[in-house]
Image (cartoon, rainbow over all chains, first blue to last red; front, top):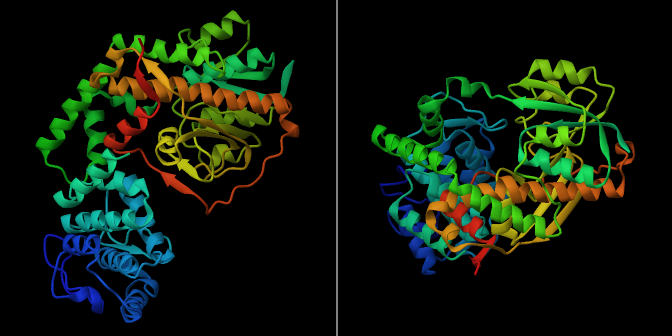
Length: 171
Length: 299
């Protein structure tokens, strides 16, 4: 279970090695940048279990939960020096397309067709969470489409926006 | 010599002029030319409301003040792109193209003028897109089987279900680079230009491929004033509408040189799961990509 709203607020990461108390996604990115996060197979197993329960086995997936699990998965991959899991990147791709094509994110999506489950747009927190997920995905893949979407996203945090702009500067 | 069973969907776009240039150069005349004037329906209610509508669709949750700012910015840019000074920049890029090994194109004549000068007969139809029922009715009765697409939006199932296959030249190597603004994405990601010629299907740039071509990034030298920031959008338009048109025409030239009879072309299917779909880049990335095509000022 994810314990809190993801952005602009603290997140209680359930993965044991990411836990280290409550912190924001940005703080975790900074810790990863400083190589201060170490993770083990137990962390991966914990995430796999929650991914299965909350995403893989669900007919309808909750956007914020799925994004936060993606973020954890991508953070874990970096901490363990492993390639990101295909399932995590595939879901990031689906959210990227939703964002780029419609500029909308809904609270939930049907897992199979990835069609919106309701007409209600998600909050600022959802858009902000998407930007940190995309940033962490960029750190692992170097895919500039993520940077483009981060810069287009009005709710990208100043820290992530600043890093994205620095990346563009170096191109 | 006529290209058998082949329709050229001419339009006012520079890509159409570039395709015409190579067909004339090779003395290969399409069996049929249909001049399609594309008049998008949204333009009927256009102007300020249209700009606001498009911006509201593009931004996530901005305040009315922020939207107003962007509308003003967009309107300023639009008038900038129509500035006659941009014409000089376009001429510089056209000169580069015509001095390179790319096809020489008469960009500053209209498609109609080129057709008339060469006494090429054509039919003319005004449609909102190639999905327009009027166009589908016309194409359904055509004896030809291949149509060279220039513009007209994403083709939907009804038009793709006719007996005619639509040939498209896309500015990216498929399946790696699919989607929007791909010439610029190729420059950013692969440091080169890529072009692919394929038959369109219902997917985004996922059709059966006839030919791909890669090119090193050009080094286009502009006069110093055209490297100034106020010409940023004009530089982008010059790449999309002039250089991109010439690269596409170069691929058509290679295809027709290889085999001018469409019945003998051998398309191969793409791996539809491979590659990435690109979207229009944020303006910071777009500016970086455009900059990769231009070197310093011409002396």
